[in-house]
Each structure stands twice: as C-alpha cells, then as structure tokens.
Amino acid sequence: METVIPPPPVPSVAVRGLSAVFPIHRIYCVGRNYAAHAREMGHDPDREPPFFFQKNPDSVVANGGNFPYPARSRNVQHEIELVVALGRGGSGLRDTESLDWVYGYAVGLDMTRRDLQGRMKKMGRPWEIGKAFERAAPCSDIVPADRIGHPHTGAIWLKVNGEVRQQGDLDQMIWRVPEIIAHLSEMFTLAPGDLIYTGTPAGVAEVQRGDLLEGGIDGIGVLCITVV
Image 1 (tube, one colour):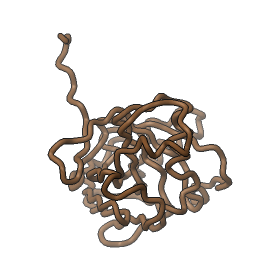
Image 2 (tube, rainbow, N blue to C red; image 1 turned 30 degrees about the vertical axis):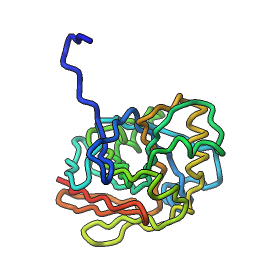
Image 3 (cartoon, rainbow, N blue to C red; image 1 turned 90 degrees about the vertical axis):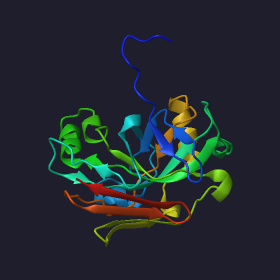
Image 4 (tube, helix red, strand yellow; image 1 turned 60 degrees about the vertical axis):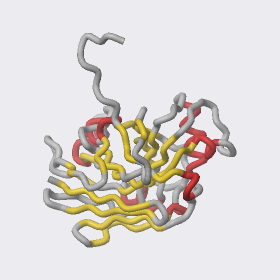
C-alpha cells in the first residue's frame, strides 16, 4: 500500500529465547489494583469495578534501556507491574476462558508524571499527560505462557539504586488476570498484540536522573532501566 508519508515502525517487545518479536497493538493499564497502593494514593480499596487507561505502543523501553526524565514534570514516579501479552483477540470474554487469550507475561514499569496527573485530576480533566508520554512503559522480555503457565502468586518488587522501594505478591491483586481481561473485553475489542499492565503494589516514589531501577517478578524475570 502506498502511503503519503513513510509509515512508522511497528513497536515490539522481545520474546525470551526467540529471535522473533512480539508486535504491540495497544497498551492498557489497570488503575489501583492493589489495596495498599490504593490507600497510599488516598482511595478506598474496596472492590470497585476495575478502571483502565492507555499508554502509547511506542512508549515501550526495552530491558537495559534508558528512561529520559520527561519535560514539564518535577515528580516522576515508578510503578512496577505484571504485564500480560495477548496472543488472541475478542470481545465479551468470560473470565473462565480469558487465559486462553494470553500469549505470555513480562515485567513492566508504569512511569508516571505524578504532579501533572494530580493537576489534571483536580481540574476534572483527562490525565493522559501524566501517563501516556514518551518512554513511559518500560517492559522486559515476554516469557510465553506455554513455558511458565499462568502465574497467580509470586513476589513482585522494585529496587532503586539497590534499595527496596516496592514489595508485594501477585496474589494481592484485587482483580486477577482472568477478571481483568474479561472486564476489559466488555469495553474494547481486544486484539493480538495488546499488552495489559495490571497495577502496582504500594511503595511508589519519585525517581531522579541517574537512578538505576531494577524490578522483578518471581518466575517471570527482571527489568532494569536507568533514568537519564
């Protein structure tokens, strides 16, 4: 197909053990999916229906890469998360079948311009400016589910310059992965290549230029990013 300008490259994530990569269609993120994090952000952790926001597919940063400290912010924070990579698409899925749509799992960071997000909240405006900026979605290599199964427990953690900042377990998620996929499929038609960032445990905090962020999930892997 002829285009009037050069088409942009397709964003992708590496797959562990393969030379082929995972092409990204969309990035969805779940908000306040750990009770302790909901409390630290000033919200009631009762099991309200899950809500979602999006990041841009080309915001992914590969493992070992750099995260440039973004402009117009003085409070950028880390949020370590389990990432679900979908290999199939559909809508109106049941949670009993939704894991069949999962290709694999990865470790991700939902980087957030917290000051800009907070400002937009107070004004009653959308807060993509705090979430959907460049390089805001670091992601490790994807591990296929046919190698590791579908983890529902396991330590999730983040260190900054060797100091533990976030610690939790996947079993602390308010909404589990099958439920997340089912709820999301009621509002969007999911597609192969979608990534879902599933929420973060407590301990989110500011990062500074020069910080080394090392985060991991038992049985999945480790993600390392440098703030520059």
